[in-house]
Image (cartoon, rainbow, N blue to C red; front, side, top):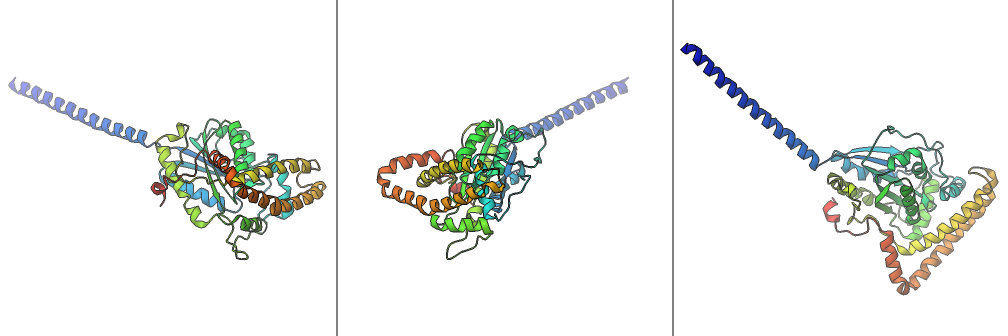
Length: 358
């Protein structure tokens, strides 16, 4: 009888010990799960869609610098390179280059190949890396923004635009803003990389690069394009963006890349650019009335436009800049207001450069 009571007492103590051990194990497991959840909620990983088109490879290099920190931080980045059904040549034969102007200005986009994106894919952020052709977005990016799939991917999403060009991107960006808004997207930031060479020099070196593929030093002028150091420095935007995404800042409706010298606007160029945009609008409609892109019927009109373009570059643009310089004291307040407006949303301030430059 006594032995039976001792056995029952030992069994009860063992059962109690197992219960306590199990409870403690459950508590430890719960703490681990809670810790993991808290950690995940503090540093959420996001899905980022990057849409890119680059003929020279310069814009692709800049884009690669930007997205590398995002990937290093664990964010999922899908890089989609647009492919037109009929590829655009590079270097460009001059007649083909001029012949692309009317459709580019009128946003008559060509067909692009199907995207390598699942039909049900969803992203937290969209980055659009585009070229500027004739003061307008390059035709492949226009095709993406006007396509049903492109509009589905952008609808309701925060969007960042990235451009690399000679120096005139303002009119193209205004068009991008409109196309993004029409697709239901929300432009959050803009980043612009430009050739820092003298404008008169880039009038020669950039067309030489486009038409011959040569971008090296020419007649004492610096190489065409964005400087290698500027391309490498593009990673600062990726580091800042990674921090912003980790804090869910893409959801708050404000710019995420302020203080990083994202854009630097010369308001004097803006005035010349808008005049050129109006002229391109008139010429594009006139040339299209002679036929479609590639048809010989519009070759005479393209020749006349080419002569006009050369004359405008050599006379009208320098004259406009000279007049603005002469009257700059009278135009100062207007130009500064124009600069502040055109540098939105990301701005030219530099207060975050030290934090994110490496």
